[in-house]
Structure formats: structure tokens, C-alpha cells
Image (cartoon, rainbow, N blue to C red; front, side, top):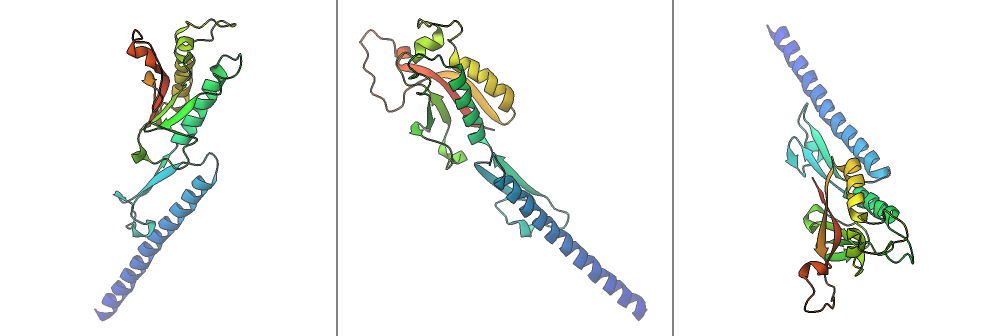
Length: 201
């Protein structure tokens, strides 16, 4: 009986060591794969880590046969593609319109999304030039046909490529922080510019 008990205890100890090794291996594997994702281009702008369903827990806290998840934020990649699409669809005369698409985060203009976090607010791209609305609506006389609906065309292209990771919506927005002089007869809608509103899912 003592021998059986002893063998049983030894076997139990082996199971404990194997399970511990499995958890450690899982944590090490997760860290390696996460490092690879963060190293390779295009790099996610941010991420959230879940260990056995608990956000922010370290990888080493994973239970035997548990689950480690990383939720990567690729909004910067979406926005970059949106900017490139707007540039491509923009009519070119002086080049001013094409170079004036501006990125806003929570109403403030920014140069890029390298420091963006989900709590920072919505991301908007718009063109603040006074005639941007006329171009979008086809009311600006253009040299080439099909030079209107720049933002609407970009919305469709970006949505086809990234519609599964972000919400991309065409709309009209006022220019945040800008002092635009208009006559008393000007409609409030004339103050708004074509825009793409981009939100991560």
C-alpha cells in the first residue's frame, strides 16, 4: 500500500511539473508571437492583453490550458490608407486641395496616430479649404470629369479593405477651431466640409 501511495504521489508531482511547464511555455510563446507582431510592419498602434479573460494581467498568470489574447489596434493603418486614397482621388490644379486633407483626433488637428489610444476620441479626416464642399458636391468647375465626390469615393475604397476592423463613414463636419467668415445669408451647412469619420470596432 505504501508503494502504491508513493508511486501515486510521484506521478502527481510529475503532472504538476508538466502543467506548470505547459503554462510557462504558453506564456513564453505568447510573448514571442506578440513581440513579432509589434516588430513587423505595419505595426499596431496599440494593443490590449487578456489573460484568461482578465484584461491587463501578465502572461505568466495564465492558468494551465488557459487562453492569452492580444487585441491589436490597427487604426493608424486604416487612416494611412484613407489619406492615400483621398490623395489619389483628389483633383490637381495647384495641388493645394490634395495637400490639405487634415487629420483630427477629438477635434484637434494631429500629424499622425502614433500616440493615439482608444480613449482619445474619434478620428476624423477633412479638408478645411472653403471650396472643398463644392468639389465634393460637383459644383466646382473642374478640368476633368469625375473629380467630384472625393470623400465618398475614398469611403467606399477604405470600407472594402478595412470594413472588418473599423467603421468608416462619409459625412460633413464643421472645421474644428477655424474662424470662417461667412455672410449672414450663408447657411450653416456651408460651414461644413466633407469628412471621413473612422472608429475602431
